[in-house]
Length: 440
Image (cartoon, rainbow, N blue to C red; front, top):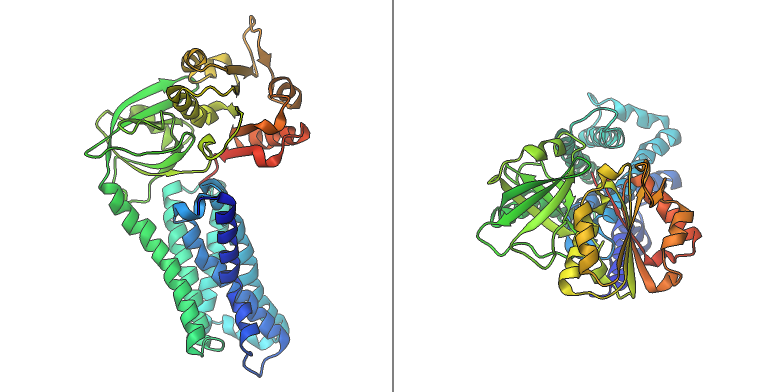
């Protein structure tokens, strides 16, 4: 499906059909008799919540066909939000039962309750731990790799034990065709897990990279230059990103997403630009040439190659300029003649990464202008200062709002403020594209 709107609609409809299948089954086939409305209502909540949890494995498997219409960052944000919805539905399932009949409380006694009830209790506890450790990972000071491993274990436990509970009750799943439906969804879920944890890492081992250089940039930012080993290299679109595994096996859950900052049309050498802000990123400056690396990508829908437009407005702060550099370098090599405006915000003039590169690109591209916005400018500064707010944007974005595409990348707060300002300046939302940093 080449049309992103058609593909996006297809995946949404398919998702709704699968998650609502338990309710659709009730409409297609009469429910067994002997239970009241609230018990049936509770069961529906449980089934829909469990179906949502099973589909989470497919959402996080980074299938290009699924992510392409929206962008992987949007898919992963949806994954976070829908987990909370599934959590509410699954938790509502036993709560409704307890209010309906207090005798159900006896099932909480895991020492005497039947196994199907024990499965349900342990599954629910696993889900609670999964949500708590995800929402408050930073407050709990959980290392990313530890959290991700724990997250995967808890997710598998939640779904596997939830399925065991459903089959143990054997109320709606007594009919073979209904059981088959859930088996197929389970195969989809765990098949996605096998793909992302076993098959994809094996594919990555067939196309390894070596670190060629680590180039320091201003603002405590470093560019990691990689060269493919025994293959032609990765082909990506300008603005996309990849998950990087460095100096270890791709089977280990220690990968991190970074944007490409190199020419997308050149596969024999790729570059990722990284800001030192955490445990892993602080080690990039010490990486030695020759270090082995693996890339899972490309990913992302943040690229002008997907759209026809008369011009581009690129707005970034800090390391958010990384995908913009890839876009600019690629378009310069292609000889693109469209007008391009970059609005680049930083704390100080000394923090402006790729400063010389932008000056060079200004000469290479026919209609390229750079507007630096410096929060604390030097005394002799004659450019824009302070923040990239509505008034500043009004001075620098084109009067023809609809003929251009607007690409935003930066910190969450920066993106929120810029998006709000563009809406107030009557830029159509469908022409605004954002790259979020909070993928993990």
